[in-house]
Image (cartoon, rainbow over all chains, first blue to last red; front, side, top):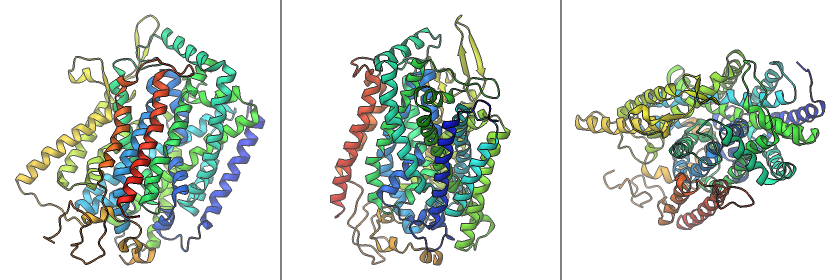
Length: 548
Length: 87
């Protein structure tokens, strides 16, 4: 387990990891929770986070360890297409600015904890709410598992192999999430982000200097892609890849704010202005992510060779840790690894809380224990958060990690299918509840079918093509498969969403023509604009919510 | 309920007699939020190497600059909306 271990790196990593774990347990007493046995407290941190905490929490939540490892790995392998993470995280904030504040308001008036709570009240359909909840849970689970891939990449680079270290790390994470709820990742996010900013800023100054400047770095990248037989790579996008780039950025942005963990962090903020101000401040992380993506090219110039995984395949997720290991003195490499490792804990905690809240509010209370007390709700969520993390751990250790990566790819596609019910539902009830269900089903089918069809190809130097993976080989769906005479590709989730919307609109027209019964809408137009000073919002103390 | 105009929120004719809220999400300045989407989601605008900045190809520094632009626009919209909502 500990052959060729890098001692100094591991020591620094372990100390920082333990300090942060201590913080996680202390968090239960942070900001004086009167009673953690309530979902508003355990699951939403008291619904009272101000601008700073929200900034760290959302930043820690949306920019995950996996992102920090996988985006440079994609740039390393394919070039410009990997930079989609930048437009993706630019586009998401204006959308959230206009859309999610409406969800915040209506949720605070009615005491909603999950997006499915909203769907239930808005469209008067428990079936639709159940579908939204299940979609959220299924999409989130592999995302949690991938956070482990981030930790694993770091451990590998330090020479630590075997399952035990990851099991220990996740057991600690599970324990403090259980005891402190959303307060734990909120407090840890401060440390995580401070470390990430430090590491990235040092990296983009020191590494280009050591490698002979940006000129040399981009020169090496251009040479690599010119020599590669793959027509899709390069330091700028190939023609057919442009549509993929734009639709992937937009589709990922729309999916990102529909993920339950984003909604959880947004609902935990104190008022509408906290969210709006954060939409202007969060792009600071996008800037860091953009710089980080360029680490992929630095790894090209530095001649980093990815480590192989247990299946004997090159694991490109190891390139950033290896680059740090090569470029930094070992104590600072230890700090960098800790930043990535701790970076995995924050989103993993929030995701498991979000999935657990979906389970409790939309399955447990809806179908199993209709008269659950707030304490029972909190208890159910705490236990569910353990189950969810255990599931993620088993998925990574017992199955091929590739399985989780495929599922996460599919996760973005399927969570996008809740857009008509959740995001459009915040504006209009024109779409009929049954039409939304039909659209969801159509989107799921198309999303699954298109993603299944996508092959991962290896372009050999002699001009032949080897199919590395026959199915789930990425997210770029060739339009030629639909009969179009083009080499252009499009993000599979985007096609699925189009199918979803078309079916939902057509079905609504039919259902309205035959006068199918509309569900009851428990929300009112001005619920969507309510703010903290609204008398109905300030009623949202746990006691008032319990009486509801 | 019939006196309520659902798409004109914040009107003082609320049937339940609660305090009127003079808010609205609608403000002409909010359309500015479309600018970051347009400048980043149309790759032909920036899919080239030259002009470079500090030897970094246009493709990359343009998109990093677009982050700064989107921050400025979001701040402008935030301030405009805050004024109209009476703070």
